Image (cartoon, rainbow, N blue to C red; front, side, top):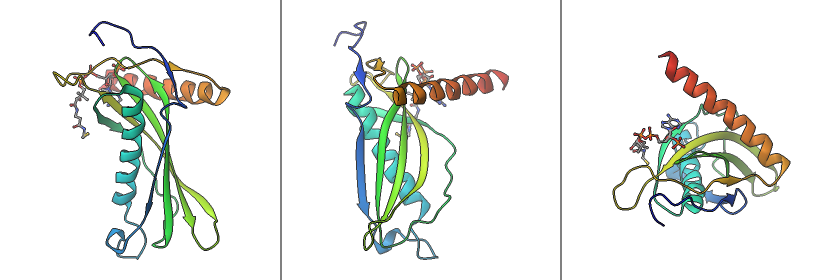
Length: 163
Ligand SMILES: CC(C)(COP(=O)(O)OP(=O)(O)OC[C@H]1O[C@@H](n2cnc3c(N)ncnc32)[C@H](O)[C@@H]1OP(=O)(O)O)[C@@H](O)C(=O)NCCC(=O)NCCS
């Protein structure tokens, strides 16, 4: 695509992705539960796949919002990260990643984390931020998540201006 060409829009459905992992003993903390850093890595990998699928170019993580671990993930849990786009700017993409832990024996699933990550697409040749396809909002859920992302973006810009 030429540098000034506007890419065609794409929906969140087209790039939504799931990454799953069965945790191993070397991924546990001193309490025998899954180490938080392992979950963060899974979340970032999942978000990165979503962003790359949308941009079809390399991306870097530019921001990770506040992350809370409200429930432990146990050693025997099967962990899934589900990522989907909530907002697309000119070169940036915000991805919502939801983490679910499934107790394999019972099939009981718990949502353990939701977080928002922002990626920037890079031009393959010069490594500079590159324009990405606009986001087509298809559903009410798309529109609700997009409006919330707009509010986060406005708050961030206001915080930066206040510094
Ligand atoms: C990502 C990077 C190339 C952006 O460079 P930059 O000079 O800040 O570029 P810009 O100011 O043009 O910003 C690019 C986009 O990022 C967005 N952005 C920048 N900082 C941001 C932040 N803290 N949170 C959310 N979005 C941010 C801008 O709003 C802009 O979005 P838009 O084009 O959709 O409007 C540069 O910050 C970088 O290389 N960071 C390191 C990335 C990295 O190593 N990540 C970890 C490993 S993957």
